Image 1 (cartoon, each protein chain N blue to C red):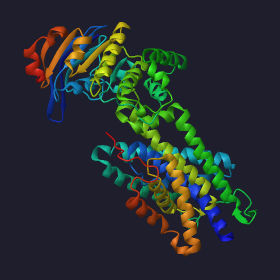
Image 2 (image 1 turned 135 degrees about the vertical axis):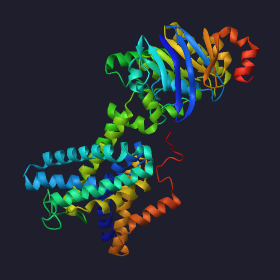
Image 3 (image 1 turned 120 degrees about the horizontal axis):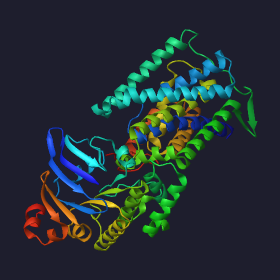
Image 4 (image 1 turned 30 degrees about the horizontal axis):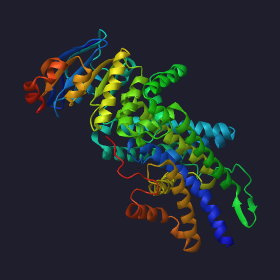
Length: 234
Length: 293
């Protein structure tokens, strides 16, 4: 579904990603691990169209998409769930969800999809009139996932959904990702938490200093102390 | 007591108008963190366009008002293109200077087009110039028109932000530009329409106020300062704050003019800005620690 070849991204003269290649099969969950400053978020931002890559190719469903803008990627169903739960804090939960559907116009479909999101995350229905900023961290994570679903996401790019959450909420996030996978969504999951990655992903890639340093089965990664020690610093 | 109630009534009507000017400033600032220093000139352009339509061309009032508002909307789009989008990469300070440039250009154009017809153009009153009597209070009918119209524009804006998709998109972009991008919104266009809506509000204010102020190319500056004082008092990012700040400023100004000296009136907005920045840095309704990415 997604095929990234020799991708490089630079901020000014600083190269953040160098020659990154990997692919994501339709319907799979692929984890992308790496420590701080390894270029994970930059990679997601390049795939979402927030920054233009310097070189290489990004093919999505057979189409070259490197250099397209964020609104064009969202229309194609490539939607990022950003790190740190970037919700519209002073707007209501249902307004936030509607904004997720900003690229769509069929009111009836939008309403149906909102019903689907509420079925997936019932707490959002209870709190739909509340300001998004008043929700707990876990609820905001659910809201930002729900907002991405409202755009009719086919490929979800999740940036550290577990960060800053209590262990119980991390379990809830894992469960949500598994349910999304059951619904046939393709997910590229950026994580620092190896446990989360191993629980949901089949394939894993480890990013270090802007290059892919390890690629293989996610379940094996957690049992590979050498990889963990050298690439994730633990 | 009679004087007090008279001053209060005048204060509230002019205050509602200041609130309207402040609203336009706040709408643009909230989204872009830029005080559009050409805002007063957009107000002037609105008034001048209405003068052309209504007085020179003899169109009826309502179409004149709509045309003037539409004209200001277009000038707002041009302002965004010239003074914001193309300058933003050089920093917000450059944008501020660019908006000063726009203000001078608009004043120059106004002198060329509407100058030389006498220094001050007078806009005929829409309603009888006879003052109305409410109990002991006398009030000019035109002031009441401004008050009601200002309230209508404010209510319309509130509905626009609460109920329409475009309004929510603007609000979302102002509150979190990155998240707005990730929703697929074209935030560059939204900034453009934000400038345009702010300009349209200024244009509407200009048309409403024209019968009370006389029109001249420099009319915008004084009213811009008053609008800015009201906006700062209200917390610069708050829509209700702009309205309350405007009403307060109007009342303070009238009371100062009535009880201290009439020459104090024009100093009041500066005092209010200084007071607000010193003692109330976040204004009455401002949010502490508001920050853009």
